Length: 420
Image 1 (cartoon, rainbow, N blue to C red):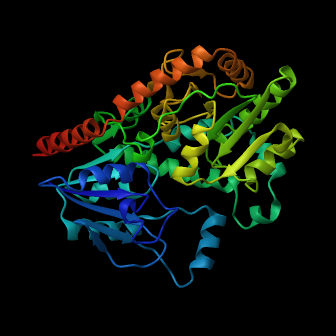
Image 2: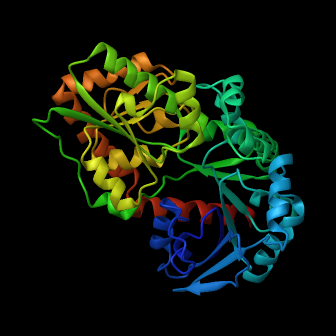
Image 3: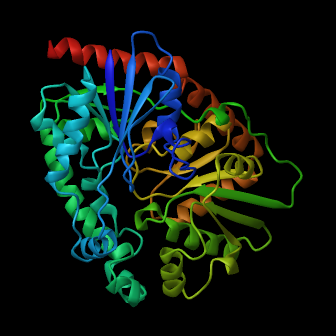
């Protein structure tokens, strides 16, 4: 079987490209399991900012697809200002990869890129792995911060140059329109939550959906969280990106409530993935008229895998405050370590966690309910321990390497039989 992936990451080709911060996490883990299978040939196509020749590593072919231009800086500025997204003229480069590799099946990771636009031009069966959904994200984009406040407090020079969260929103409105087209083109989808399954049934009527869970990075299987006893400090960790809909403002408001209502409890909240200089941090501090550091919230920025695991192991609780998500890997990794977790009833998260069994679920955007759930965990060590044990059991089954690979191969074979 010859399989061609279209991804937003070089996967295991990152080391060859010296792209340490350009990794795909679970996609790398999946490739690691597939590359040594017999009668299986894999190729990975991905966008890359520089022109570079295709290369091979241990039998896997890598196709960097570049759109580099000598006037790249000027063109990039123009595209940002007018919110231009890749046009269909780029499809030909993807088709050239398909023509050269001649896959039996094509696997596209995500609908947010332009890869899915190839489908009307090919006869090779294509399956899309749903990662998120910009169409729905638009409805929750300003759940925590209004567009008015965003524009009011955004720094004006970067705004005029086409940078920042406001421009991200306008670009993603166009991405959502393109994503709608991609869903209508595709006949086969795979995912891992009730949320993405239901979206596929509406956005692509009569399509076929396959359940396939994701692999986690191997390092998370090697560690197990243990309760931190007899400590005067309770540490919370969250891992989120610099997007408005990820709920950073909920953390801020929740931590302020904890400081006001429970002054005797020393609680530190660490956030990985958010840096002190991020635009969203500046905007929230302007709106709330208080700094994150005043509330003992530590912004750690981007962490490498082992650094992140180290912070998780030193923390008492993992909190995921997002307003919308499919199946955030940060939650899955925390569960795999065996941590107690509080997350929101958002998107596909209820497919990952059963409330009061292997985690606690609260309404998104509600700092009061979140603060109450945190106090429950602080005051009940038995609850904390039980949630963590159950989370690890569930995640170990869900992310079992053998099971995930078998499900994926079953999906491929079923599609090929259906096509034939």
